Structure formats: C-alpha cells, structure tokens
Length: 189
Image 1 (tube, one colour):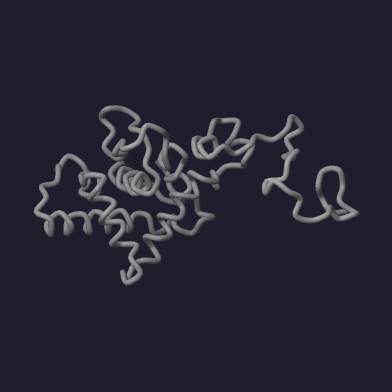
Image 2 (cartoon, rainbow, N blue to C red):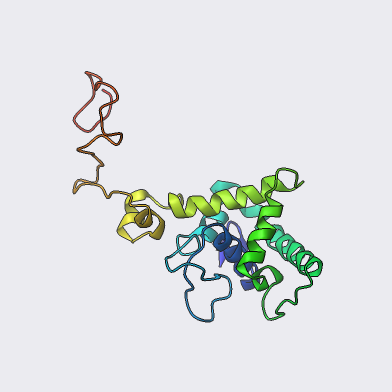
C-alpha cells in the first residue's frame, strides 16, 4: 500500500493501523484481524482512512511513517519486557500487544515529558482527524461514500444543491444579525 512517496511493507501498515485503532477504536474487519483490537462494535479510525491520511504528503508525516512504525515496535518490545509479556511472533510487536497494553504504551509516548511526544501526538491527531473530519476526502465525497466517522458523529448532509444550510441555529438562538451584503448562498458580496 503506498503511503506518501514510499511503499511500506504490510507489517508497517499493521503497526500504523494498530496505532490508529488505539486512538479511535473500531470493529474488527474479520475474525483474523490483528491490527484492530475490536473493543467496540462500530467502525473506527482505520476504516475512516487513518493510514491514508497519515500517508498523505500534504500532512507532512509521510516521510516519518517507516521510522515511526519501527520505533513503535521497539517501544512495544521494551514494554513487553518491562511487563513480562510474551508477544506473538507472527505479528509485529506493537500489534501483538493487547488493547490495554497498546493504550498504556501510547499514553506513555504522548506524555508531556516524553522526548518524542510531538511525533506520537501528531500521529494521534491525524488518526483522530481521519475519523472525525475525513480530512483526506471532500466532505460531500466522504458523506456520499458512507464515511464512518462523519456518520457516527451525525454530520448533516448537504441539501440537494450540495450546499449546507441550517434552518435552526446550532446554539438554539441567533448569535448575530446577518450582514446586509450576505448573498442567498451565505457568502459575503
């Protein structure tokens, strides 16, 4: 699967998927799925396109993904040693961790005092963005293809003309008067 300008091996994809699933958990894609822990019944970051968003060159993380996947495995191996865990050698070390252990490790990596915090928080933010905004897709495309995050948070579809208009105020009251030069489509003139 291409990510950014590089090809990543399947194990690296599994590690990145497992990381994204730790941030926004989802349902397993199949009983054999090891990257997604399956701690919830609904789709999560992986199905929402987290790996695609992480690998998008526009986001700036793509060049670091190969190293990030390798480091996650190194941290997982160290974590397993510290906690006397035996990891399944059939999958990468981070993927072999239980969901609870993945969560504990990611919390450690994202802690304020961790020297690589910026990298791990960046990966976490992008994983979350894939779910709650579908940032790698146009909003209309995401909604028309059934993007799980936008549907899950109840994002309203556009009207038939492709524009969003809201008959009620989101705060339950009008916060300001409409500018006198606002067009019928909501744009300033």
